[in-house]
Image: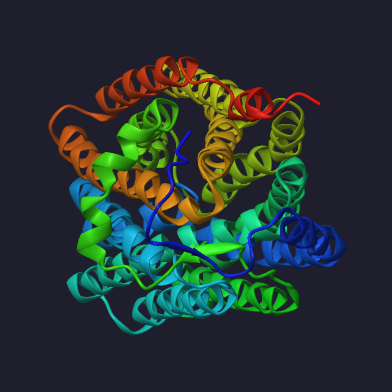
Length: 440
């Protein structure tokens, strides 16, 4: 485990057993309140974000503007490049803070403003100007999303005990996904299909902004305990970047997780092209987009209850393995299918598998290292993942243009298989923690 004493770390409280007991008592005392606040935030916030991340509306909008598969990859790559550039910087913002809620709230609003910008640009701009604006807002959305990914996960690790995170994640994603599924169907059928307010895509993005803005207000009810230990002073970005190799060397199991997540992230290179591949066989009307969005999001929603239960009982390692296997099987069905029912079934599997992978990737990392190490552990794995997710769609766009979609899917399958092999060599962190506990 990554547990060497860091000379840059200082205790914010007297790090005695009694202080740790008081900290844990506060976490348990505020758990009902924090659980419900996170649940409400997820139900509305995730609804809007899933409209943005579903492999339907944004790729279809970019393709409508450009008519280019490469442009789709470039636009989606810009979003993940922004996330890769900001994750470690996000860690430096909070490593020295005993409370991170203010940073989470501020960065959350900056993310939402980019969705608003994307919507307004779609309303008022056309052609290459609209395409350029979309790339800029997606890149900024990703940049602030990279910071948010680190800060929000640190907050989660403080206010929700590890044995309750699976339940919260499952319920939050279930309720948020259920709402998102209905909104996605209505967005495709009525907003895009009927070109609402003169631009159906812009209207859909505006709806996403409104829902996420309502959702973030729930976080004001969170009660965050002060950390028992933080870094003594703010970190410099380049200093922390130089620490990455030693961080990876310190724990071989974390290192394997780092590479497994990066490989699986390369598997997401195919995600923006799922719907474009389907478009070769069926007409992508507004209603059809709604059906596929509903299949993807509803399966992601329902499966999250199962993923959360498995995580609480057996750990996120098993969730990672099972979900990536399902993701691979659904990708195969997408490659081999040629009819609407088979494609809808494939999108159900893609939603459930990809959703489980996201749950595992975001939560598995929280079980490595010590509390004061979490910001950098999260940031380092996020950076690798987002960098691969930035490169993947761009490479995918080139391959799609030159060779077709099937080659992207086979390449993605190879990367996901390699990720599975890597995770199989990781020991379940909860077993390691139990083994490290002194016998009573």
